[in-house]
Image 1: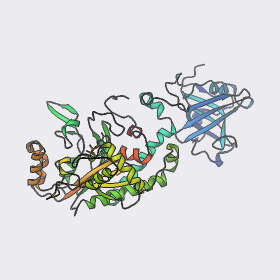
Image 2: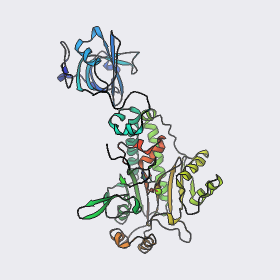
Image 3: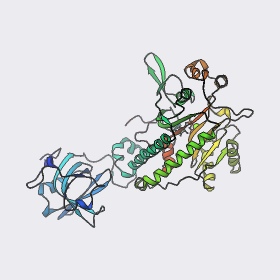
Image 4: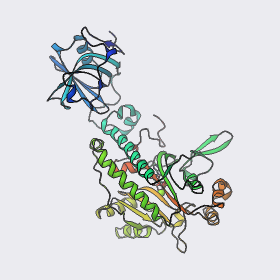
Length: 454
Ligand code: ATP
Ligand code: MG
């Protein structure tokens, strides 16, 4: 008998073509007890105790115990199920029964089985075993890695977080937009641009939607957001950088100051985290994450405050320099000891910020901000320079040639309101919210210097 896609419908069994209602581990209910059901999933484990054998069937929602008392199970069904390699995919028909011993409180006693896909063995990576595996092995075999409920749950939370962000912004009258990912020039500095061959021209993968969302501010689409991939050729191997991430960007026109932007983001973060705590409980338990709702309002530190705090902790940062990963981390510890998981760092030196950020006139600083979450930057933003002349001046100051930004600058010449916005790395947010050790845990198929497949 071949087991591959085989149909085993024993005498007296129910033909598979007239399947009883399909249930999964989440939807079998008391009403099903004593009735025929069909369940489908992966064979997580097989235990043959002689007189009875058990198959633990796993699906998206949990596990189902298939119990096969030898005397009460059609021999072919018993034989097929007890000899299946782990991780094979099957459909099982049988009677649902209450069971005090089964984890879910019920089991299914089968009378028919269809092997939908027989797994090869040995598996390159165990699914149910609790042994530690190298991260490389996990990502090389991501299709198996993602079968682990605790790994998969991160993506359920990510999806929920996106839903909540969407709902919040739509409620605030924001319009979701999509800007080009193949672009002629970068906004965030040349070093991390990925060149692409674009017919007979050189183009790049977009590092951020910065220039386009700003152009939109001149159109009447005056509050926009975009959640889309961004690409950066990050040379260093860190736990918070990848080459492709999901950037959650927003831009708002007619702001009075960047405080309008901070308020909007703060509201959005609170609504999202509250929603995740409320609706994502099961997934959070699987991940083992303890998520707190950050205290509002988030404290606002100026860059100079932050440098001062670090100095008092024994870390010297030259005025004007980046706080750096270590600085951010130490600041995170200080802020967390004060009960603050999220906090703003505003007014960075203008020299350290891109050309599109507005200078704070009469000072070396700028109308800019970062949002840090538990010691890591998750977002950057600020008020933008909307005055055409000043913008050109700033480009020159940064050593950029305004003529290569003509398509962008033109939008500032014919009526551009004051505006501001942000870019937030979705996976950094998920990483910090769930306390994941590495940003890659929040990405299905991460891309970095060393990884282009799967
Ligand atoms: P960092 O200093 O941490 O490298 P950045 O200041 O260069 O980040 P921004 O240009 O401010 O990054 O981008 C806005 C947001 O996009 C960041 O706050 C971060 O959340 C996210 N982000 C930027 N680069 C990456 C990356 N390589 N991988 C994942 N997320 C990123
Ligand atoms: Mg930044």
